[in-house]
Image (cartoon, rainbow, N blue to C red; front, side):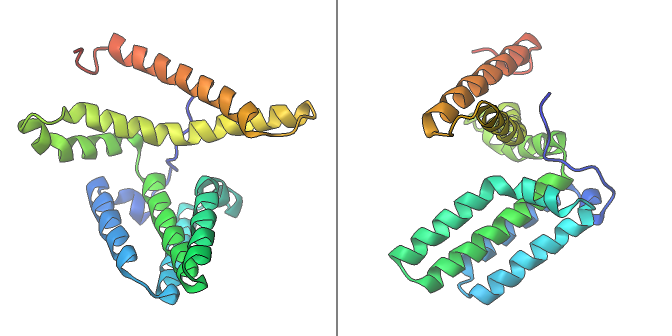
Length: 202
């Protein structure tokens, strides 16, 4: 059973139209990349973190949602600080942290079905000129969103299995089973989609 990033609730963000949330996220993301002041970006990150309080979930649950992005944020910020300057590294850290927090808010308050509907409608103009099939684009985005927590769950299962056997974690022993199980699951989902005629056969 695939886990979902969505959190049930009745907050203002839950009631907001999915299209509005995605548009706002796009605008906020653009704004974050134009801001160069660490203090302002830090305030944005705090606002994003405060927004999670509306979800009525524990700090541990918030951390579990953000943990997959935490390493990326830290690594990018660290390399930026080393290659450029500590100030730019701090700017990168708060910018990416704020972006991750706002994106997490949108995924937490929007169901996968709503994501698919919005993306499908947005892709309709491209379908009219023959570039893509809107339904396939929406379905692809929806599956990506659903696979994020699933991959994290599989990694945790592999890690726990290593610990239970007293084995040390190494990239190969983790990556190989993770890739195999993920590809197997993707193949099963693709077969189920084709069996139901959801996407058009080429």
